[in-house]
Image 1 (cartoon, rainbow, N blue to C red):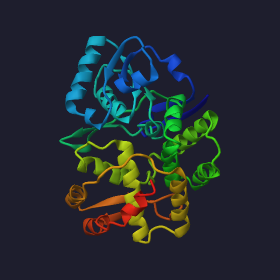
Image 2: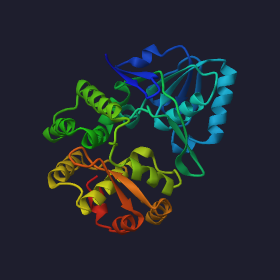
Image 3: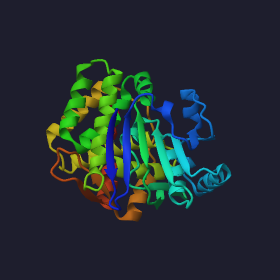
Image 4: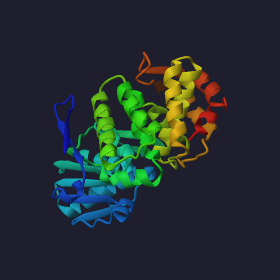
Length: 329
């Protein structure tokens, strides 16, 4: 079992615990579960409350619902078992509720395992992604790689895209390590999957507070807002990364080797079965309202990010050839 400790600027700390079968030792608490995850995992913990997953759940009305559940339960400790949306919702409610002392997280999706919420929690308002934010830090994050291994296996290794993207964005050496495993075609064992998740999550935690972030996050959030929150975050992240990389490539902000490596990884992984139709007009309108958008650049780049004006963004996003990059997925 591996552990990583994260300490915030306020000196609050969170322990991340990595391993398998961690759900067998859930702390005594009120358990708020993603109903879909509960069905898939076949778990029935005591003191449970079921909620749906998905981006639409991150609303003020649902925060008030969590407040009522907390009051009825009388519990001062809360455990969340689910994906990033449910974690954000309950984390926001817990961090703004004066009687919650402890918060424990069991992320059940690959994205939520490698990008744990250690910079506060956010909910949506009026179909704008993450408009309302709260400060807060979970006490512990239990990263049980068993929860995502079977999902990864069912969709033919496509979930490896997410730790690969984190590595590509933050640590060139880790990117090469994961890339070599993908290209070799070797079986991704439970042990290897656990190692990949731990490594990607660790470098993400270390990046918090630095100037670097994961490629695709900024535009991915805008894609969700442009779709009125109907697009899953993992899908928006994929296409956000594709678009940010297209902009970086077209603007001469990336060297050729970095591009070729990622193209090769995407070619080997094959189609991820996450097709979507981007509302380009709504996306452009959002960027126009902000006056532009920041895009993240990969670890191999000299810069960590670059500001794109609204005019340049519109020109580049309406350049249909960028979708050819997405076709490799």
